[in-house]
Image (cartoon, rainbow, N blue to C red; front, side):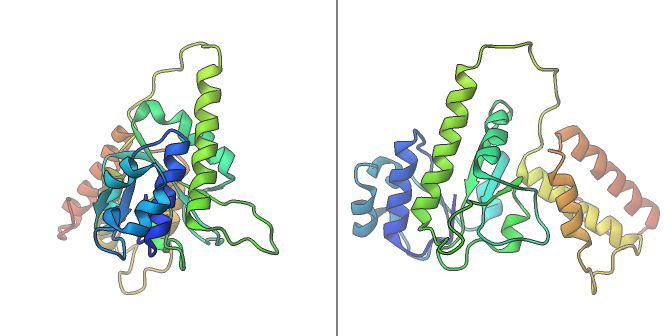
Length: 244
């Protein structure tokens, strides 16, 4: 997923990077150039990955892009005070590979100039950082896509080559990204109803809670329990709240 990409050439090169690693689904979130899939520069830089470029899905928001996704990795060059746990690309790819059986996974990349906003990072399951040369750490968007796609491919191949071991203990279905986002809205309304959260001065409570839950990999049943708690709080308080 490319969030607000600016340059058509980078979109085309990213499509090429994905295809070389065996991936074919590209999602563009609010690209700066309309109909970038048919832009001549993008097509030229795709260099044979025209099919990946042409089939790219365009959406307006990252929330829309992540709808139905069970596990997502946000790539960032900046240190974040809050947000999901920060991992090296290989560790992030290994975690993502382990989640494949539960549903769709996504790699999320930001704009070429500003990267991902905090609100985007907070919507993802994990945070990856490429440990490039500190003296010159600037990576082109498509290069970053290539690095993460390569690590994910390696993780998939290693997983496929491992001899099957004991079947893992049965676990619940992981909640999808949009289900978790609705839970956060519901929980925030409940905390406001309790006067535990002041909407005029929220400080960092919700980002901290997001970070806490991002470490756990919430299952759908757990999300339903938390929403049930929030619903009960709102009913007892007699205050209106979100039940999205």
